[in-house]
Amino acid sequence: MNESFKTSVAAFLILASLMLADRAVAGPPVAFEWKEVNAGVGVIWEPRAGLQALNHKGRFYVFGGRTPKMMPLAFGDSVFYNDVWESANSGKDWSRISGGHGAPWPARAYFQAVSKGPYMYVIGGQDSAAFPNPDPTCGGFLPPGVPCPEWILGSTFFNDVWRSRDGTNWQKMTSDAAWTARAGLSAVTHRGWIYVMGGSVNDDSAIIGPGGPPRIYYNDVYRSRDGRHWQKMTEAAPWAPRAGAVVVSRGAYMYVLGGEDGFICNPTTPRCPPYFNDVWKSKDGRHWQRVTADAGWSPRPGHQCEVLFGRFYCFGGFGISEEPSMPFKPANPVDIWASYDGAQWTQLSGSAAPPWNAAGPEDIKYDFAAFPVYWVNGGFRPSIFTFGGDRETFDPTDFLGFQKVDNDVWQFRIKWRQRRR
Image (tube, rainbow, N blue to C red):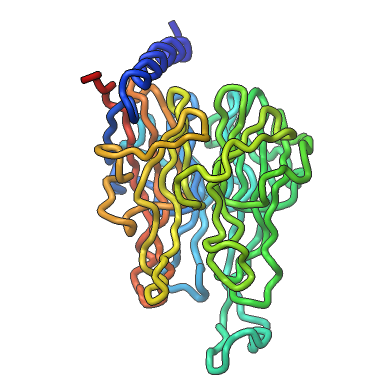
């Protein structure tokens, strides 16, 4: 009996029991626990955000991402990675398999990685570097007396696609996919296709200051069988253009959840914060149906939503302080939400919340990586694993802000079914 068949049988039996439990008791039918698998010690990848992680052929892989520089020349200046790390024991121990110079694909963050058949794919993203500011007046946008920064950040955006069977040997499928270069895009493997949608290009004014090219957000959808040949499904889906959205495959449908069309509130922002908490679904990427305009959880980017036994679990993400006198006060959402249909959501409590056993919003991560897995170290232990992530507040008075990026591994595990009382 192979592993995929065992997983299917066990999943069916447990899903049936969970559905029966939902009819017997109110609220979530299972108990959970958050367990730190690796605190970021030993031989492990550097702390980073905007990374990707995959469960491929029973092994865990971590790719790319960025780490803020200790002595940045410009706000947001970072080290970007093109390394690949592998774990054979569910995230406890790691080995670098990409060689001394990294993988052949350029270093990047805020990209996507998906597993399809025998291959892992790396898709899109961005890197950035500091360079001397060519406009010492900053275009006259800054208030009198505020000096223009000597250095500013500029990013390179990618629309290349690479694939590998083992994380060590990589093949470039295309250096110029049919969709425009972008970061913060969403991607998923669904019914034999790789789908790419949304994302953005150009740096936000909150990072580089005013006067640069405007940030452009997308709501187009493309798909491919092999990462080389792409088919446009729609130029403009009915959901608003966005980056940082989550897309997952469940059954016959793909679901898009949340995201952003801006970093912070400003006079040109129609909403404050400029984030989303709507949910949309589609079978083919061309025809979309809105599941809900307001999922109940606060609008957010940088979060993750994963599916276990047909149920969505959403957590993490970035939040903006609602106190005008304390604009940099940590406000990341300290909650986790579950849903069977994407329309009706329940906030979990007890051992399920807060994520990562957080003491407060300052401990909540965003731009982390996550995936669900049913078999852990040879046993049937349905879980969601998370990897690294960001906790920066962007407070200019926080001189240790660059340290608030993680390289830990956590397991969010289903423990048992609640009994009817």
